[in-house]
Amino acid sequence: MRRLLAVLIVALLSVASSAVPAWAVLCPPGCGTSEIGGVTCRVCDHKPGKPSPGKPGKPDLPACPPSKDAVPEGATDNPPKGWVLVRCMEGSLVLLFWVEPRVNPRQLARSLLDEMDLTPIDIGITPKGPDAMALVGLPVWLWVDDPSSATWGPMSISAGGVTMTAKAHKVVWDLGDGTKMSCGKGTEWTYGVGEKPSPTCGHTYTKQGRYTVEASSYWTAGWSGYGQSGSFSFQLTRAQRLDVGELQVIVTSGR
Image 1 (cartoon, one colour):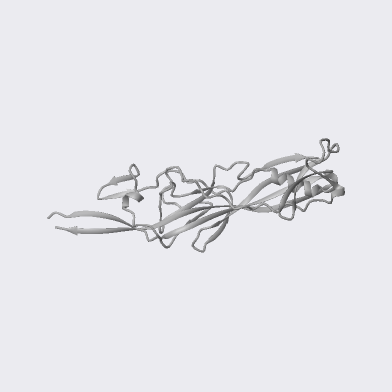
Image 2: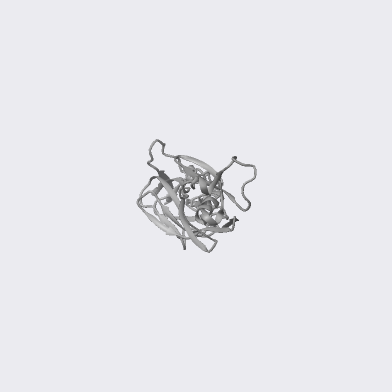
């Protein structure tokens, strides 16, 4: 009597406006490992697709100062010595004025924040790859990918006697299925960890579908100058799509 054991892997993904992919989408060429009587699928380390732009999150610029305390940019070729150029709002317009920094150091600090090229984090998520698919019941790892001074801090700037340092202190993840969680930088997934959950930041989906994952980094920018100090708090957000499929193993036998 001879028995034949066949393992059929069927990927079931129900997402709006998309066809059901073949199992090869879950295990692209080079990512499947054949074993006795079956196939093992592992995550493929392809370069992720370009994430969506971040949402603006810095606090609004301050109102422009009274004309007696400021000089509009371009009004003179020789602004008063020691004065600095700041951005401010006049209605819906962003204007530039020369001001004496000690008169309103907070206004100068806010203008310095605008000079910082801070951006949302680059999302680190498993499975990696623009066409990769997560699976129901398997852990998804979340982390700040390649953190830099622009995406995590600290970043410092000084001008006119005011110094500011900005840094992020947490990331709030919205996983698109009603789950939100707060993490630090998280732990990057690497080959060899298998199906273990992340030790610092992760999630497991229970239903297949197409989800939008949002990562909001929370920042604090502290400033000091002329005997005064303060801080600004703000968030920067990045979003990315994640498809979650369901893996079914059907075992058949025959003579």
